[in-house]
Image (cartoon, rainbow, N blue to C red):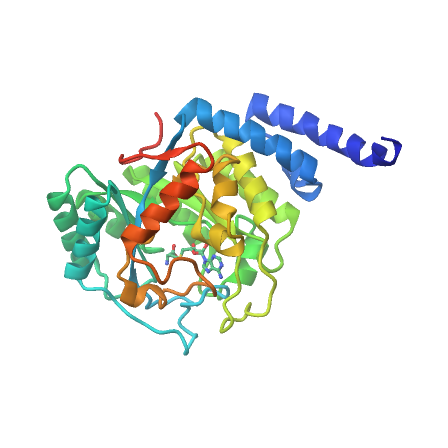
Length: 358
Ligand code: SAH
């Protein structure tokens, strides 16, 4: 079609880059930036189908689940995008007891979960002793399960103790690999340097590590996202969690536009092609921004879902952003709904720890 000439020429340029990515699993910063900045519906479709094929080659039709237990909405940090930042005086704070956390894991086990992710704000109540006790109880009750932690930045010593207590995985999104952008999203007392120190400590100690970033958050450009992809390419985490930024109205970014599902899904596909074995969740944020966002993510390279196992009474209080999905449903309902969604894209939730393929 003559009127399509320009766009199809551009698409061809991108198609060559996609070929190169599939062959070499690596692009230059500038090439990543072009792929991101010049996204068209055509290239997105092409990328998604290639990423879907790669996911199927590596993981077949299996989709792994992780049961998310949101243990505390107290946080000493003040990240500008996050609804549970310490400066948010309207945030409702709660903290689960050790018994409540263990009970969530027990319920999750009966529902078929073999991995539990304990996540929370940086709540000083959760000292190493407290966390080691909880990890030990879950591991003793369910030795066939993996315990994953996501409690932000801690000392190397602390990560070591938690690992010895039986935590095998740690999720710590790097948030933004571009130093200038990282500074705009965080208060002066936080630094990208320390975030990176944590990630390398976790790796050295022997954790399976999950990095990750938000998509479409304030001030973020295609060049910034290219930095994120290059970081992932170099660091080679076991998992990479990405989701659209969604504003929370009582934060400094509360009136900013949300990121889009299209850009998030596109980045999921790029990540799958860069690192075929990567564990890639179709996140709750993606499902929040678009009703079938998680299905689209799963059809474009994602292979993990993380349903919420937190008690109903606290779900609404873990409000990182507004409009969060599944705050009114029991865990069992969530897993039923999610199983149907996963099946709708020709995949199946499996009862498995869901380790990264070696
Ligand atoms: N305290 C832990 C857990 C943070 S919450 C830590 O520091 O790692 C988990 C993730 O939610 C964050 O890493 C961030 O990427 C994401 N998040 C926070 N606020 C968000 C928002 N407004 N929109 C989308 N994602 C958000």
